[in-house]
Image 1 (cartoon, rainbow, N blue to C red):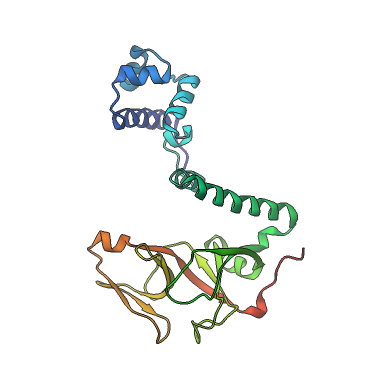
Image 2 (cartoon, one colour; image 1 turned 30 degrees about the horizontal axis):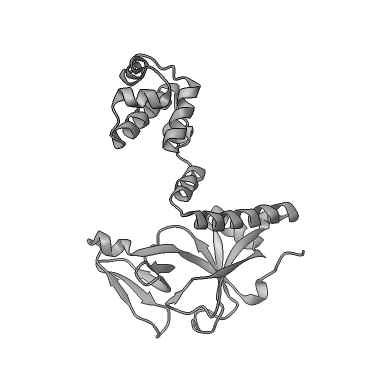
Length: 253
């Protein structure tokens, strides 16, 4: 998204005032936090000047913890990732940092790293309604699938047991897209109350139905008009297709 100078300025001023009001600050108090005079602050808010001192912008970042491009109204996938990281606990951030380091190391080691995807391998026997309390991450070559699905293919999940036969077999890798499910999609849903993950066929309607893939498991019915009930389910992702065990190729090194 390309913004004009005026749009950037207007968004920054709006963000500045929102942050001030959210904290219950007066304009003089906010001006002091940003290292500028009260009259200077009021001129910025009134649109009498579009010149914002770089140091003042830096002070606002230090005060709010928000990046300057975020305050200016920029929207992109990297920013959404930063915003999500901001909400995590220190231990969660350390875990995510470890995964990022793993991906960076792989990128350095493999000349054709773009032909591989990351695959989550839940510890234990993956079955319907299990808690994903631990998992390993592996890399597999999936160049033909990446050519087919492009950026829609985000990651994989490996089936580690025979519990989901005949639909999925042990060793299958489900290729996952991180979009909302559509009618008839197979998707992975995680229940916030019990922490369990379920592979279900998504049936649009009211109620929404999450149907088991085989004769085992419960069909969950969700009231579309009940926001709390719908929000109780995390949509991990939709299954684009599966890779059979014989197709899986690990990195050469």
